[in-house]
Image 1 (cartoon, rainbow, N blue to C red):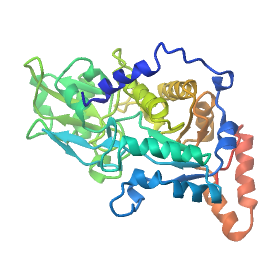
Image 2 (image 1 turned 180 degrees about the horizontal axis):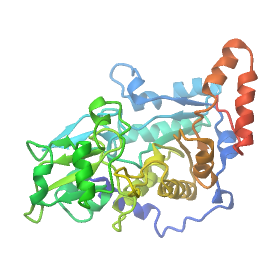
Image 3 (image 1 turned 180 degrees about the vertical axis):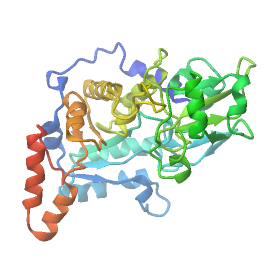
Length: 384
């Protein structure tokens, strides 16, 4: 009942078969429509909010006085950052987030940040002031919550939700030692290469986490011995692009369990809770495939990641919302992700030039950067 996959399935009747119709203007990205409705945004990342005594972070954001102040100075949108329960579960205890709520394990609001009722009050307070709320989608990975624990126990479709593989008992000596079913250990590059040659893995990757131990590993971790619901004991190896506590979802499994979970998150955020804008995190990593002639897998800017991003953007538009993405890629790749995908993308190109213009009163560098964007066929829209 605590798993995101099950929560997503319970949310589907809000949309499926309910006669929701496409509106003509929702057929393609609408960047100018977003900016017309909300041109000035503030990021209220939950970990940085100092709430008044006795008040939650979300209740602080829901304060009508805050929105009156926002309205007075021209702020139209609050991007909350991720606020759903994150971290993991060990035995019968929740463990805290290890990555600023980017290791989601539930579609419920994290009680450490507030309540669902407070979130709905926030949406109403924003609307009364003519503003919008933006939430977050994390389509790459989850934390080690109920879904991951069910996958390790080979329950139902859950193993197909993750990029993970069962290792045969005769090959367990290759794996690092893990002391109990609740722990995992990094797989070395050498072992990952062996597992790739044996047909278990598509290849190793270069992890994106800042931890030197993780960055020097293969991007794969091994579990301990886990007793399945069928009575069989298994050991698994699973992929993590960032932290080992963030197992990667599988966007190319016939169960479609991973995408189902993210679909449910879209419905939860836009239809159920009422936030009309969502940010997509780390979308260039959604694909994975073997790479011929090398032990490294193709996992960054894979064509599947473009398709996955487009799919989510279409779903968000169909439900009446907008989306934007974190995407630090070259211009040519940016065009691929933006053609049919999210309405907006973070600007990783003109930040320095923009600050230089403000500080020096000279827009020459900013003008030059915008010229490069226009030559690449990219239309910049600056959000102050």
